[in-house]
Amino acid sequence: MFDRRCLPLLACAATLLLAAAVVAQEPIVSTFASDDEGWEASGGMLSYQASAGNPGGYVEFEDLETGLGFVVAPTAFLGDLSAYDGGALKFDLKSTLDNGEVMLEAFGWVSLESGPIAIDLDVTPRAFLEDWTTITVPLTADAWEQLPEDWALLLTNVTAIRIYIDAQDGTGDRVGMDNCRITPAGMVPVEPQRWGTLKKSFAP
Ligand SMILES: [Ca+2]
Image (cartoon, rainbow, N blue to C red; front, side):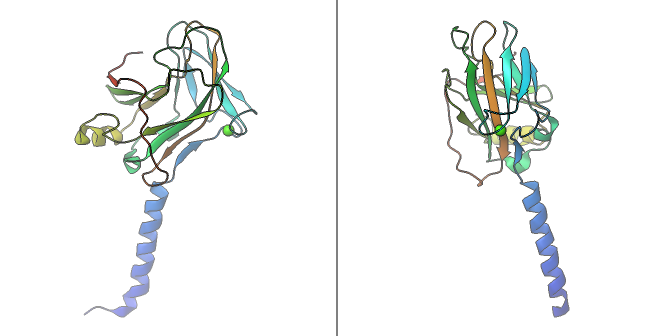
């Protein structure tokens, strides 16, 4: 027979489970309030700027090589991201120095990697971004044109996230990045953005 004395205990357990679920779905955020928060660059230099971000501090990529340049997310953004399926990866970009060259086709591509598997999506307009512009990348199998089972498997072990923020041909151009975050489903409306053709297994 059910013992009503267990009710407070059950309520307590339910509250703990709910709290655990909420904790698991906290957004992952880099606002660069005081440093670069572990973001790194390839093909250029990433420097921390304490002001003129969106708002506050931001990181600025300076293109130092003729090849493609990108930033690499720190470990806080990696691992098992299953709790964020249906959510979004978001970041703000702004061109901070125009070198006068044409825009690179790869500007604004995002690459998700899981071991040897890499999938890429063109999420940013091929345009000079005069002002801070928020880019939203839906974290869904549909947006990334993946089979649901492949997508689910990839999300369980994300080993790298690259954002190609090298904007222009040549060198010397600079792009700022701020407010990088991964949000769970339902936290904010996710509007798919598609600026080009999906390209898989893109080799930088
Ligand atoms: Ca900031």
